[in-house]
Image 1 (cartoon, rainbow, N blue to C red):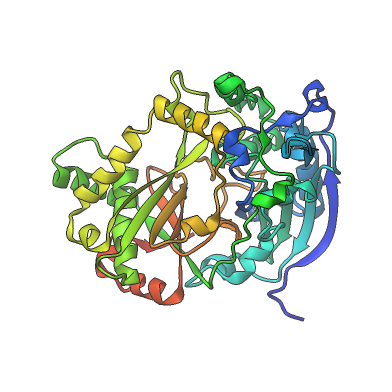
Image 2 (image 1 turned 135 degrees about the vertical axis):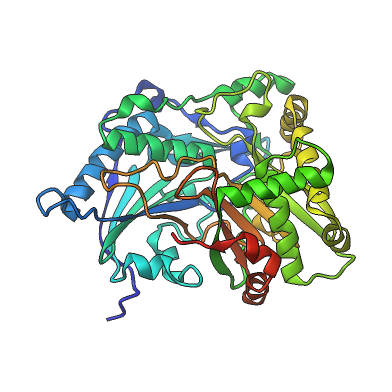
Length: 454
């Protein structure tokens, strides 16, 4: 028997413990939601060790599974769209279709119990993320439009020889990273009977922001007969995935250097770190000097509105910004110049720009495709501000964060907080093998980064 095979033991479906009145109405998707229909589900998971102080009576996989199911059912009362299903209404006369969430359609959230005869060390102490990690998630390479037939939320709990991995796959047309981790945080609090400390999700606020643009209501029809007409299924080349750790002191040094180089005091630590990684990755990939390289940033639009939307607004409220230059110009300028390009990109992205883009989208819808991002350079997604390590489910602080195969391509970089906190950052970088080896041999990069010890 192959010990590196994930074996599914059982599966069931979890519905909200009770229905709320809002679930009887369609949950309409916004432009930010609909633009994600061709992306993959979000797949992130947390790795836990079994606390040594728990005896057999206090911990058993059966008890853990039952408590997770019970708390998930309660959590879905607040996050009721995740228990629904995508539906499409077609207007043949106008050659349009309306995609929305039918909150009472479908079987609910999927819940899988699986086993894997490997240890925590087998998962986190290898040179690269082992391929088996992808099997710790459901919905492998499913695109969000597949939510017409697949559950919008699937949880997989995998027993390891000395730990547990909880992986969540959530439809990216329903949540962005902020909402994704809000769900995790709420579920963890409810599991710990501490449900009053997490703000409830707020729905519909973005709809109110654009509903009067061009006389548009909450229902947004797409100029297609079938939603799958916009789907593009991207198949990434073979990649190596590796976590690099940047201590808080290293991040601060990069920020100080970037501001010194640019003779400003406005560049943030994350802008400096992103600039450093962009230069390092492009140097490692040995691109032609005159080739255009891009740095893309997934950016949260909530604080861009005036007045800003609350952080607990549920749904997608993100965009991907990009700045570009030539390889030669990027590598021959100092860190401050590169970080300044990113800083200006971010500070100029304000309320007017966001609203103008929403209005333009209603006139001419644009849908993100992964192959659009797989070009020379990097795409920085997720955020070290997300509370990933605050989810314990009675098992203590997670040992590590890992992700599935979703939304990966050459140059994709996923940011997570460092386990020790304090401003440290973990970056999961995805590159072809030869480029990854070159990055590992880059003295400047490795002087700042260390192999993740989680």
